Length: 68
Image (tube, rainbow, N blue to C red; front, top):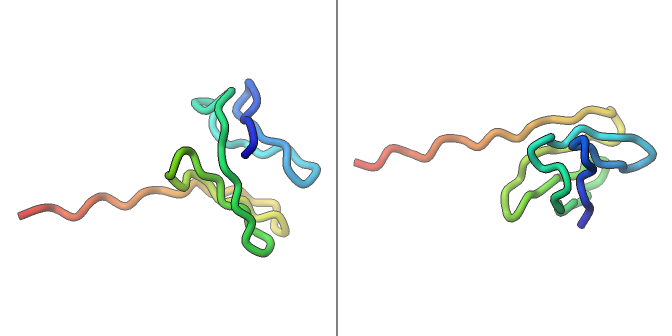
């Protein structure tokens, strides 16, 4: 668990990563998988950090299938 700072960033691996201004001051869970780190808020995956490529990707939720 890590706390997002007041500007929506998280310090990890010697670098500041933009997470979300909306989560400023909140706690997120980090799950490291090789050279990637998945960032979860509650149980929702919100961002993936590529430590090697120094890239951050927003994880978009796919829409729920239409119920008929």
